[in-house]
Image (cartoon, rainbow, N blue to C red; front, side, top):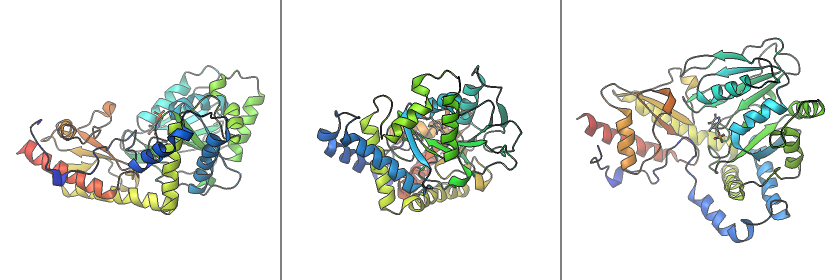
Length: 374
Ligand SMILES: *Cc1c(COP(=O)(O)O)cnc(C)c1O
């Protein structure tokens, strides 16, 4: 398969199709290079960098059409570290988790080990589906995932009916934020890392917080719970209000992410980006449905992700061989999620990737499959 050479006219312009980190737009890299001499290597406590952080917070606020009293918080560590922060600064006693893939399960497992919390409640369904969020008495935090990046399943976000009055809905939106709609009325914390739809780089977490979520931070801060400062939501809140992080962030990540948010807003905001990813999704799922050797992994169309497509392949053709051949031709990171163990490709439909690039990729897969099977 190393010898299969995809003709240049079939190739996408850029070979990066990974579901995280995302392809970064060259314009964003160029903008960083242009500002580098005055921006990189300067203090994150000084007005120049803080102004960039403020623009990023305001840009996110606008992109998500947030109510005035929602705040954008940020700190170092990415979504994975944010889970630990939720364990210390948001979950009061008992959380409920919808688990339907690797990321949602990882958060559940992190909570399960925390000595100061009660055993979390688990609602789980097999990969390719998602559980329904049902309220239970005594749950103070509902943990949802907007898009399960490991399986390509997305879900609609709603407060569970009959939940305790001050229960919070916290949503891992790491791969969904910036390409999927959501209603702030239904969510208290919508958190993500910037290396997916926002095509920045890793290392940071950001989140939109409702007034109820801010109240919870204050409440737990005032309690006797010991909280390590790096995970302390109150410290993150106070710093975010000053357009800073507790310790030094990657200035490059912040700049790249702001470039992407500005690009989204200039082109028409969330409706535009969501439309762009939805168009890529129509292309790849439509392609898979037309091919005898491929099918979308997620059977229910409403749950098929517009940001991460998972495509199953017929036994006659090995998805690993397709991915390896693509990789040998410079088309990288189409391998399925390693722990899922399916004969599958996983393709990112993040906004930085134009729909025409997805069409080109489908053409390349056709070319490769014909030669692998033939
Ligand atoms: C990528 C991803 C994460 C992990 O993000 P990190 O920045 O690597 O911590 C968590 N949840 C989801 C849904 C993701 O897609």
